[in-house]
Amino acid sequence: MKELPVVVIGAGPIGLAAAANLVTRGIPVKVLEAGDAAGANIRDWGHVRLFSPWEFNVDPASRVLLAAAGWREPESGSYPTGNDLVEIYLAPLAATNELTSVIEYGVRVAAISRHGIDKVVSRDRELRPFQLTVVGRDGAVSRVQARAVIDASGTWRTPNPVNASGVPAEGEETLADRIAIAITRFQATFPENASPVLVVAGGVAANKAIRTALERTCAANDFRFLAPPHALCTDNAAMIAWAAAERILAGLDEPNAMDFAPRSRWPLDEISTPMVGSGRRGPKA
Ligand SMILES: Cc1cc2nc3c(=O)[nH]c(=O)nc-3n(C[C@H](O)[C@H](O)[C@H](O)COP(=O)(O)OP(=O)(O)OC[C@H]3O[C@@H](n4cnc5c(N)ncnc54)[C@H](O)[C@@H]3O)c2cc1C
Image: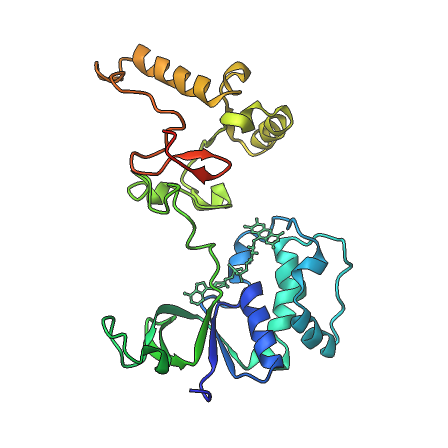
């Protein structure tokens, strides 16, 4: 198996760092990237500034490859945007002699299995190479064998569902085309929405500085700004109670809607284990 490459899925910061470290150790490597260029996911939020400064974002093995290609490292202590990270670091790294020849773009890994072994066989499984099923831009399917696989495909396109248990919350799949995941550019995502309304609630709406900044941004972008009165933003229970009162006044609730036993720290769905606090699960509810 040693002659086979280690396959790295994704040419984001982690995939490229893994490839740089493998190349440096003389281990054959192949990087399979779904996008057209390195850092494809980061480009989606390229306008946002990172929270970690340059020196934390540069991998040591990658720094060595880049330095040999005449790269000048950005000043430590300064903070790049996502676009800076791609243009100043990831693109030049992917273009180094060592990495450019091992990265293939426009190929999406659809499955990882063991070559010649189906799901139910466990005997000698570990002796077989990995087999990746790869789909090209034109939909053509090919197979790639690997001695090992490093999954650096990130979480940008495979985020956690809303439900804390890792499965979609009720209605989440039905409304999938109306839910923008993670950071997005609203007007680009929903161009048909002529008079958008930004609804802000909870602690965010209670924070005066954030609220004022959002109000200003909305005014500048022709968004209507909608937030509950300040007095109702401080406490989740008050907000939920107020929403319930409005529903009852509007005649929306069924007669027996109040016929249940309250539970402390009630989870968002009926089957999740409740949180006791600080992320701990327990029997409290
Ligand atoms: C707004 C924002 C700010 C952030 N700021 C910071 C920060 O300051 N510091 C920090 O450490 N982290 C920050 N992060 C997190 C940051 O995104 C990750 O640290 C970083 O991008 C992870 O790199 P990655 O290579 O694992 O994944 P990604 O950057 O997501 O790269 C994954 C790559 O894999 C490719 N890919 C995915 N699926 C497949 C597939 N099936 N087949 C082939 N290719 C595939 C994608 O096209 C992509 O190029 C921030 C994230 C966001 C959204």
